[in-house]
Amino acid sequence: MVEQKLQDTQTRALEEITRSDSLEELNEIRIRFLGKKGELTGVLRGMAAFSPEERPRIGQIANRVREKIEEKLDDRMAQLKEQVRKRKLEAETLDITLPGTVFGPGRLHPLTAVTRQIEDIFLGLGFSIAEGPEVETDYYNFEALNLPKDHPARDMQDTFFITPETLLRTHTSPVQVRTMERTAPALPVKIIAPGKVYRRDDDATHSPMFHQIEGLALDRRITFADLRGVLQVFARQMFGEDTQTRFRPSYFPFTEPSAEVDISCVMCAGKGCRVCSHTGWLEILGCGMVHPRVLEMSGYSSEEVTGFAFGMGIERVTMLKYGIDDLRLLFDNDMRFLAQF
Image 1 (cartoon, helix red, strand yellow):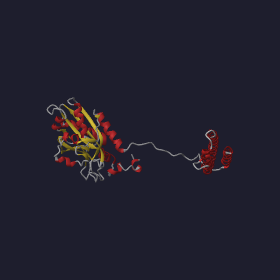
Image 2: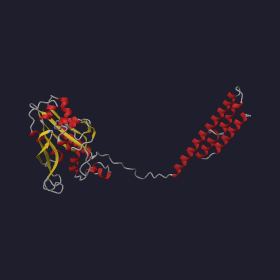
Image 3: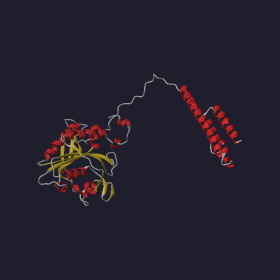
């Protein structure tokens, strides 16, 4: 009796599967016969009424019925999927004479391009590239640079503090200190330190995250004239051979004497225009001779060793080089803007 019922279930299931003409209908058949409340499952629930000797035999018959139904379902599903694919292909029209989509070559972001150009200039002058952590300690970011905790010059750098002794670096000068500690008392030392820095600024000319490149050179008998010569070479290679430089006295806690460096306006060639406020000059970087206290704290003798340091914002150089008037354009990822470079 049960064997016949299982056979009838198999026969009806196979016939319905053969007649099915859609994947939705096929899924309904699967549920009706093999689901938790399906016909085959209902037959198996009645096995408790059989003797222990009959149950294995009935179970084997039921498993064979399930296998045949599942095999038929899989075959029919494959057939229906192929039919659907063919109908889609027949409905689509493909004009092989249409031109393909042309993808232009990739470009370096202007900040990346300028960074690499600056690096190439200083590598050609014998400098090497050094890197350091972006999450710094108060000691390396300030104290080792002659900026103790009560120094008023700290207010010049709006700092992101993580803890009272941990912060996001406000300049790449800590890389200089770490390099001096690692190399002291060996000479000479000539490095540049490119990288991201962070300050609480956000407007058309400032960003909370920006990029700097700082440089350091240490040796015996290095003078301010060496610093001036290096920066003149840099300015002319970056902005053109006719570029003039001007050094103005300034103040930085970690250098003495210190100077701000201007270049002749890249827009008007020094004649005076709106960009340079009709002065003919544009400020580009700060520099100076390494402060004796910084040398001593890093392991060098200020009696025997001298050196110079400088630092510039890569965004500033990029804006001057390409005539960009809003810093935020460099971070908006607008392809209409970036495609110009």
